[in-house]
Length: 214
Image (cartoon, rainbow, N blue to C red):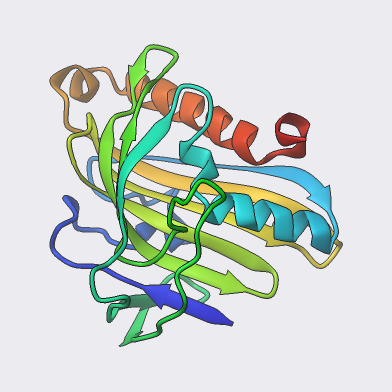
């Protein structure tokens, strides 16, 4: 198992890692709107590996109306930061480094500490944001990462993306998030936050599912 993590005071919210909590939907961070969904995207090791590669090459943020720019890996190649156990609880920090990988177009793969800017709209809702990779996990049957907002978004919060190869041989794509609205209209109309999140989840699925990528 390879697990890497990063966090510092550049993110604009306090509940770092809360997307790992099993009770996120019942007890989200204060003033935030939680969301989660999961989709079966196939079965077998080949599908798991292929989906994991897509995920680590930023595919969810590079689909349809969404694009990324200014992908900046951590300057020194590795960070000490918050780690999480299987229950989502913080554990002692560790420092792990690995060789940087790149997508076919030269974009660096997801790594702890990497920052990225997202651009676009989904169903008329702004999706622009400055994000930082909080945690990356690559395990025999689970691959994914956590993104936290740094700023320049209508919401503040966190997203967790994972691809899981379950014991019954099914492969699942799982997304969990919480959003605290920062734009005045979103603070008044929480339904806008939920609609924006549903639209984003559908774009993420289209980027990972073989129904759309093959």
